Length: 136
Image (cartoon, rainbow, N blue to C red):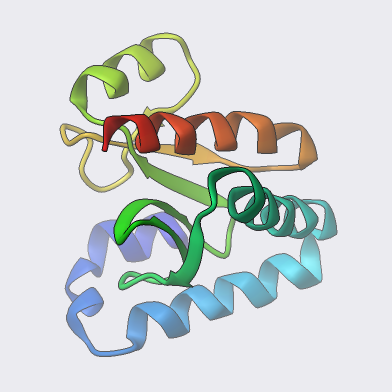
């Protein structure tokens, strides 16, 4: 469903508050159907605050954004998809090494996407956010 909405109904992202409502729906579904993924998302948020000194905030396209000194490092959607802005050179290296995928909407940008399925994925997600922080 997420892939369909993002690929076919992208224009809905311009409707005020609709991306946040859709992402809240994804978060509820995740909370009800996959507690391990939900715990991993919560762990990622906590560790980003503790280790990166990130400020959490609502992201304009839904999800929770990670901000350091006013710059966005990335954001995590309610279905466990982390998007991080690592820059093009780092994107190419991360994708080639299998540590991330090209961004799900803008594959040629400096963004990468990474699916968080459980606690074992949190370290890699933090590593991508660190890479985004180094790029700043």
